[in-house]
Image 1: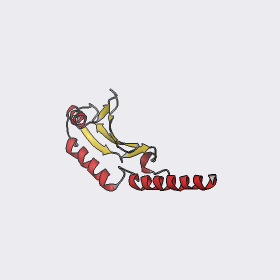
Image 2: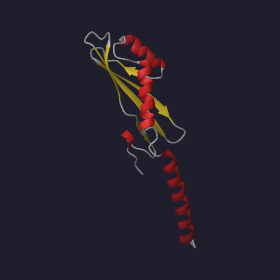
Image 3: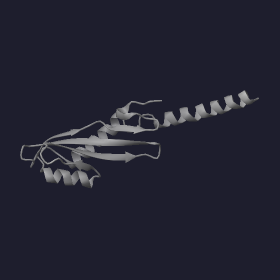
Length: 126
């Protein structure tokens, strides 16, 4: 009788896990989500924009920017939490001119998600 009850528990647990995996997938990793993120970046920052203005716009949009004084590249990140057990990180790299006054390149990176059911960089781990 014990084995029968245990098998019933395993089947119910498996069904719940497969349902959760089907609902979560690789959230935040779809081409549509990445396109939306790139649109947010394009709305807030563009090539030729003042470096200070670009940082201000991204901070208002919820990004944190790590500014190393001498580096021409600045990375800004924004974390998106979910009600499910995972979070996604949105990242954009800003390249400045040698005087660090003007943005010369804007490089949005693919969204990376991690959590209980997900691995980084969009690879699901089950």
